Amino acid sequence: MATILVAEDDPQIARALQINLSARGYRVIVAHDGETALHAAAKLTPDAVLLDLGLPGIDGCAVIEGLRTWTWVPIIVLSASLDPHSMVNVLDLGADDYVTKPFGMDELLARVRAVVRRSTVTAVVEDPVIDTGSFTVDLSAKKVWRDGASVHLTPTEWAVLEELLRNQGRLVTHRQLLERVWGPEYVGQAHYLRVYVSQLRQKLERNPSQPRHLITEPGMGHRFVP
Image 1 (cartoon, rainbow, N blue to C red):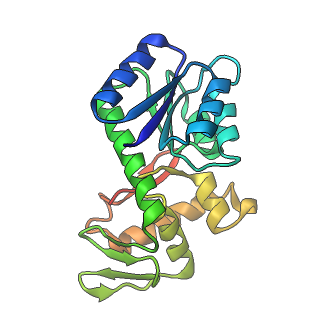
Image 2 (image 1 turned 90 degrees about the horizontal axis):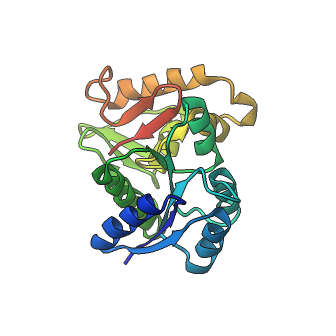
């Protein structure tokens, strides 16, 4: 049974999340402030965290920073209103995904299932072979095939693809990709990503102009969808 930590100060939202998650077989822990959320996470090691940014005391951003000093538990941010720039900053702090309030419960539950599944797969599977139906990637062998034929990728193309695949389903911000592939001195060079993601689509997507797997979220980052 997966454990979900709900860090939410609105009692109605917290109660609704507790009821819906419990009904689907999750163990639910509720914290109404940031300090309690951090203590609960340290003591009970949840499988995912649903985090409201507007918590009293220690706010949501500080909770993310605190968690990321010792754990990579998936964090889904719940936010009433964040502009794209602020949301990118939250993701750069270490959040995995976000849902805007008011949210549909079905959408949120789907996000929870996805992050719990990815967390479980990451924990138990090393160097997986990922088959999208359009192309196949062997992360251990560093090889890519499309329609049975090997696809040649440059070292930089491979680095970008690998980073996206190892964060399957998760939004990877421009800053994160640039830092991890090129280095921190390149965080302002977003045009690098446009070039290399476009090249990857040309080589891997069935219809590069309407990609199914290498998705761009304008102004924010990129996401691999299997």
